Length: 468
Image (tube, rainbow, N blue to C red; front, side):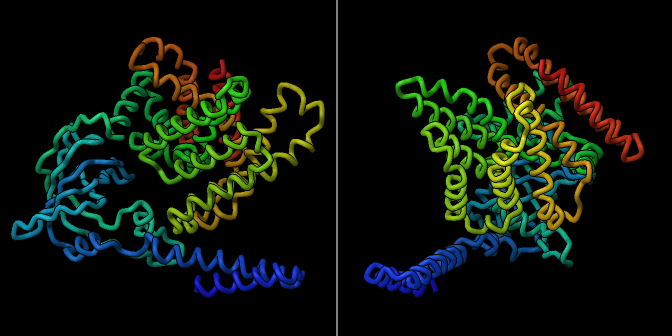
């Protein structure tokens, strides 16, 4: 199909160059769009993550049988039922009759604490060997049900097992592994934050939600703030904001533009690695780099085009991202901001726009518009929408814009001067403590109006405290 569309486009292009006819030009545009669409369909057919790879076909053929696996732990997550989900990069599989298979693939293993003692060395990056029963991954049974199988496939996981016995766990101290880096960052957060706020800080800074209580997660969802715990474009935006302010400094240096874009690439690459190269962070980092390139090299007016280029690059790498909620929400939010921010800025009265409080008001208004603009997607995918969400986001996001970059920056200082880092981090710790208290009050209080008043009061008070 793509070949036919390409031939049709070439013929139309040649005809237009000879005749310069307006009707032929219209046909040329349609032919070009048809070629692009057919190319996307053809490319997607080659790289569809929903196609079961060979390794998964072999493992899934042993459904309800017990196999032995060995690999490194890449992710540990505790579910609301208390079970642990381990994402393991398998490198060795032992089949019945002692048949060893050295193919590499990713696997999700479920560990039930009620049946097994949780070893103390069950940590990120360590090597684990275990016996497990292969479970089937079923399709969703009704239109509104969450498609767990498709979600795992988007993460490169096509098989799930239930751990029956942990044979051994070996500590791996490899500084070149991202899991080693992430483990030390988690320890640094424990050093900088109090016991009350460390679990929330881990969720806000790097999206590590394993230590949050189930009630806290429910409260986040009801307030429409679940997205701030999932590392995404919002967090990348927080990292970009300080860089955006110092861009004029790079303009004053001889090779300032090149130095600035290099530092930004390194920063975003390290943060993406810290989040295990989350698809949402990778997407947002690519967009952020292109937008910063436009700003540094005086191409700010091409922001929409640069964002489109980022989307094109991502879809060339993995066309199936077009159907993922993360891709749609990320680029939906970016384009809402790019299209509405200039209009809002022009409509604001001069006595607001040119005062010190002009930018905070802009942030609040844009946050509200983004939440409302994403309402159709949120309602379609999740079947619910928090009425207080836009207002809660308008209050909390500006303060997070200060707390997140400061908290991350001080993590770099922690290994060298832990006491100084903890002292400087105290305002951020106050903010997280206040946020934790808010969540507890939401769980114990009744009535939407009272909850909304508490939201406004706590975010305002603790946000102001964290800014000093």
